[in-house]
Length: 359
Image (tube, rainbow, N blue to C red; front, side):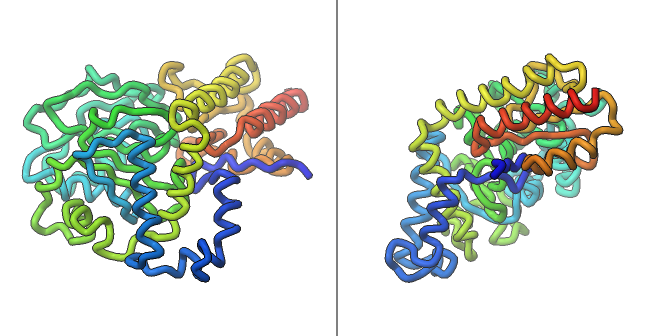
């Protein structure tokens, strides 16, 4: 049987070992006679699951004690509204647009007050990221928002900003846990789970303690980071099953060497694919080399008429979800943590055969 690989940008691959463990425990978690899906979120059976998930996440990211970890819902897009609700505090905020998602975040925040554009690479079709020293912000701003990795355009920041006078808010949905980061550089980090953490439905928020007291008085209780923090992410029923799977993913990462080891693997995988594309006269990637994402690799065929032929033949070969985003077209391979290096080799082998066939 031909091996199958899913290159979806999200929801995306979950490690096979994790899925196997979920399968084994699905009907009877640790002899309780219950599935995790059936447990009360406040029960003695479930509480250790969410507590261990937070403990393992803190260990992986070396999260300091003065940061709270929240397991919320609504996806990263909901944070487009929750960030200004919790931080703007009748002041101003600056946003950086390095791709579609960060531009949408900026647009969504407009309704909350004085939202400014600090920098944008839209004029060059987001082929590279706006450099930190080009960000135009004010020290009076409540925060600066940017996105660490853009899934559609395939650009990524690889260094953390060295800005100390204004809190940095960062959307890390598509590359969190793919490499080590310095949490202390950020005031708030958030991420939808469906790329590198687990199933859709869970949103992770990491927020520094001193930023919990600025929410607008009209902020609904479930949207208040402070209230969620005070209630250990249980002001309402959390995404219990998604948190359980996320916890297993965290353990899988720890077992396999943590973020230092997974970064080596991710570098290797992306280098293999980019090197092949760059050596080809048939395929190309036009993103600034220094900003090329390790998680989302967009590429094109010089003869655009072959794009859907490529997608269809790839599926017949067991390689799925390679069609580029509808806004930009082309092709895209998302190669998150759970994508094994064998999947990259399978993709490259197919690309070689396809090139020979249609060149």
